[in-house]
Length: 318
Image 1 (tube, helix red, strand yellow):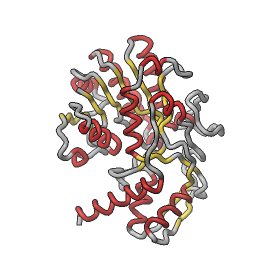
Image 2 (cartoon, one colour; image 1 turned 180 degrees about the vertical axis):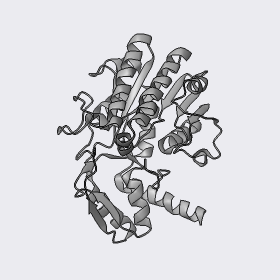
Image 3 (cartoon, helix red, strand yellow; image 1 turned 90 degrees about the vertical axis):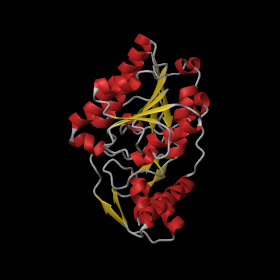
């Protein structure tokens, strides 16, 4: 049995779908605060509605599983600044509950979601796993704590832990109306509707945008990679950057959406947001060399897939 926490959410549901296609028996734990049951429609999975912050619920969900994909989290950086306790309960206490239940239940491996936010605003680019970490938000600090905790659980209890430092994920099922949503889902929906977009700052800030299908690939490969390869890395725990390894500005994204939709998309430039990082992109050579990870979907193709999903969703709702 494979457990996916946050499995009804954006990334988690894509991962569940891929696991089912591979023939895995899948259990999902999700509190449905942002996840949606409709994301799992038609999939033969066992579903537990519950919160990772509840220790007993997590223990029940983990029991009988040999592999965990830990995706559940409070993923909003602005909200982590506004509500640091909520961030801590979900992203620190919740992750501890998952890791400790894995130890208690004899789980073979945990693949868990970290974030490129752990690198902070340090100017060195591209970001490498061996870089110094400098989290500047409660969200980023919680992700670094997850990595430290994972290393301790591997060293103390032998639980195999693999952390994936996600860059900026986008794709179908990312809800643009959610405060947790990524900027590309918001841009895609507004572009499809022929509306303008708001950019906080001058639009020259860059991110390493990666399509959700490629992140699913990274998770599956992280679950299968040789333990010997993992422990021989240059970092004390098995962590890997997951992105495309490319730098793309928000202005470039808007231009790409104009090209795809044929719409003239007006841009309103606002004040930079607290906690936002100016530039970020990843060196993905470690994931490529050890996990065999290779992103398959270009930014343009990913945007096309996302726009097509929005169009289909609008038709269903009409």
